[in-house]
Image 1 (cartoon, rainbow, N blue to C red):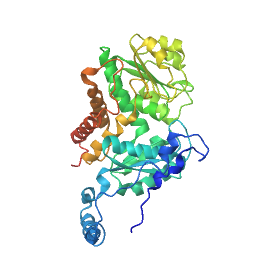
Image 2: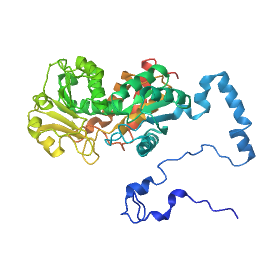
Image 3: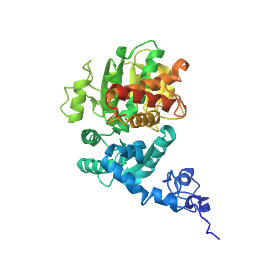
Image 4: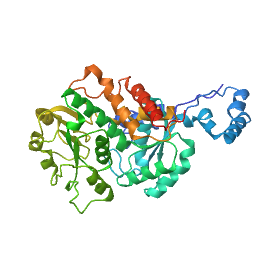
Length: 407
């Protein structure tokens, strides 16, 4: 009689699941994570010696030899064409900060299953035991032959900018730092629809962004690329402006690109008459500053779990309110973007992800809302089955149009 196969994840001893085990109050989060959230599963059966000889030796040798002669065949005869490396060093995790590589793994596993669930893309979490930018770059470059794309995740600024730039220069596969660009894509989609709802164009809007980290910098640059009228970015010391002598290289570049109005001083002062507030920093914006914004303003307070402006306060003054939370309307959630962006890029074997591909993703995402547009619905739900196909198709088409597609 064959031995019974027991699933180690179905252990019944978790009735009192908690971080310390038995005796702790039941916590469904720990119960769900026991044993991890993902596993490797074969796509072909190994039922007998014939299957074994095809999947492994000697049959595999034919495929290896063919790829050695024609390297492009790796996309057809391995998983490379549909798998992404989710890479982190654990220095900027989900608002938890620098918690280290191993502690970051639950988030990276979560990211990987979102790739699969929402985009049909396989993903592998890779947490690195280094925070040195050059070491991260060298490690990823050496891992790259196994993957069709690289999603950088939860790497702190300003190193994240350097790491992404260097990897993009050295690799011929898509490299995408989701904390920057995923947030920017979804923000642009929501902002396009909010402007449409109130009868305005992006060019008529002035925005203020709270936070000059990875997300804030990327959002500012991306919105300007898409045609926003003006944007000022504030860090802990106030508006990033040319007259400040304490700016990092990244912020000095930002000062050159933003703040056409020449504002200086505090975030609160910059909000007077502003059309848009975008929060990606945490902290709290006083209600009088929100009240000083222009009529029909938009408040996108995306800090989690506590938005910079509570929705109840924001609704007193703003025409459209969005947050990063799932329990309020208009959730700015990166899962709306990154699965479809990578699916589209991988579909056409893109060598990189361009600004045009990201703008196409935002436009497609905004388009899903369609005639249902309302103040409480400027961005679709992550569970809307139209989202990923729309973004995938738009990104693939943009890649072909921009000449970075290879199929």
